[in-house]
Image (cartoon, rainbow, N blue to C red; front, top):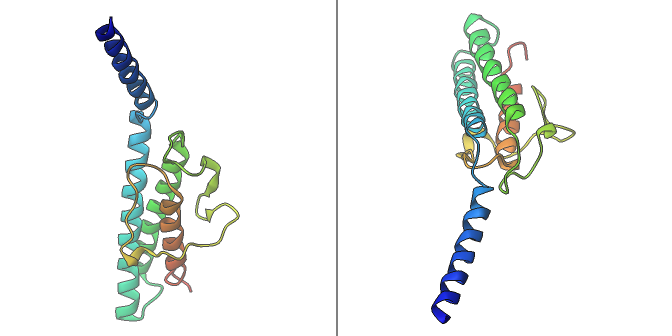
Length: 150
C-alpha cells in the first residue's frame, strides 16, 4: 500500500510538471515571428552601420548609396514591426503586449532606448522582452543621426 501511495504521488507530481510545461511550449507561428524579429533587428542594424560608415567615411549624406542603405534599414525596421505584431505575447517570459510597439516610431508613448545597437547588447531569442524593444528603439535613435537629408 505504501508503494502504491509513493507511485501515485510521484505520478501526480510528474503530471503536474508536464502540464505546467506544456502551457509554455511556444507555437510554431510564435517561434517564426520571434526569429523573424531577431533577423530584422540584426539586418536593420547592419544596414544602419553601413550607412553610418559610409557617411562618416565620405561625408556624403544624400547620394544613391545613402538612399540604398537607408531604404534597406527601413525595410527591415518595418519587418520587425510586422513580426512583432504577429507574435502572440502569451508566454511567461514576455513582459509587454502587442500594442506596445508602433511601426517606425518605437515604444508607444515612450522615448528612445539608450542601450544602443553598437554596445554589444544581444537580442533575447527566447521571449519578446522590453529589452528587445529597447534594442530596436535605440537603433531607431542611432539611425536618426544618419538618415539622409539630416
